[in-house]
Length: 105
Image (cartoon, rainbow, N blue to C red; front, side, top):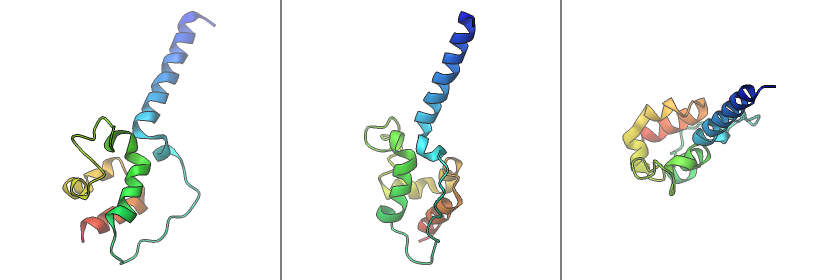
């Protein structure tokens, strides 16, 4: 194998790792568990929304993350301000329903 081919493969691997790390590997994982159904009960930011955001956005939008100063996801006000713009990154239907329910309260 030539040196150029090895460098190309290493570059692709490094780029793939960086992308997965940036958006959070947990958001790429496929879950086999069914999420609990969305009900008409009041959705709590601390109990329902924040765990979703921590699982998928922790690396950038929580304390220590590079986007925390601009968009702190540990604050309900930020999520209310962003609204459904969050859905560009959070594509899970169950998560979107919970967040929509939270926003409509």
